[in-house]
Length: 229
Image (tube, rainbow, N blue to C red; front, side, top):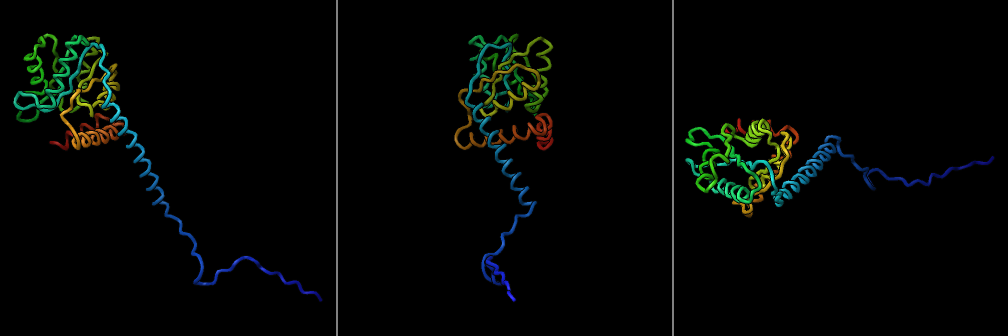
């Protein structure tokens, strides 16, 4: 009788010795990792867009210059607002638009709106009163542009030159374009924000743009208004 013996050449691992089987990551951890990577890529790209827009000046002929409002103190424009107004004066004197629109309402207790303080500043610096329009009801960027777009379009004005701080450039262009305006942006040439303050402003705008494109700029600004009350 012939007995056939089969030898198993596969390596055997004795209990308690050798390599342990690899553990698989839980599904929830994988999903979180993918979400985190997507989040970082999305906001990284958004930061680069905001930064690139802050370095571009698209000053060219338009039908109106719109100056975005910011803080004023008892009728005196803040340093940031004065820089925006000075830039608008320069653009107006270069003949790039026949009209300047100043925007911004007031906070509780203020005697002046941002638009009133801005209009007075422009007239004190030689801009004729009939070349200035005021939007005095709004307290956030979206509402300023929406109200301004509404009355300008009724006058047949759709091509505008937006003036604000450099870090603000991408968001205001995105909002204004969404409101049906043909947009050019000319940021102030010398921002009052420098160094770490400038970086903080760019990061804050990156968050505002990134979130605004998801939930809507109008809804985001209204949430911010509610939080500030």
